[in-house]
Length: 149
Image (tube, rainbow, N blue to C red):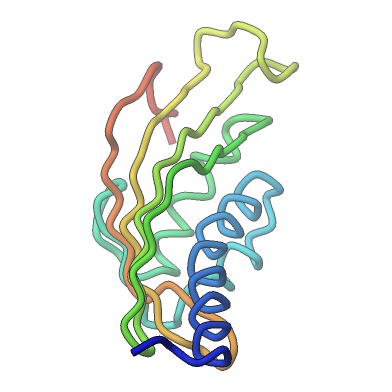
């Protein structure tokens, strides 16, 4: 049986909001807007796989110096697969993160870092929006070395 127009619209809205959450996270990282980054997650979110398993607040405390070590970052969020099951969703997002240590983004510098990751996020409905309640990060590849922070 086909979904009603209202149910289909709601499902499309939910899928869009789920897919947007990792992209909003990337915007916050690249703009160094740590409040925006934090707003993407539930209060009890756990993050694993990037450098360690941690609460979201501990994760951000450890993430921030590594990101801010480079004057400029650019996270390109690529392919996404969204699954929806009532008030829970899953999104898998491939990303490439460029960390330029050079004063001018894109110029060569021995400490430039480029990483390819896959975010596996579980989200929960929060009002009319969605928040990440669990994140597993697979660091697929890197070119360069991680900052010494």
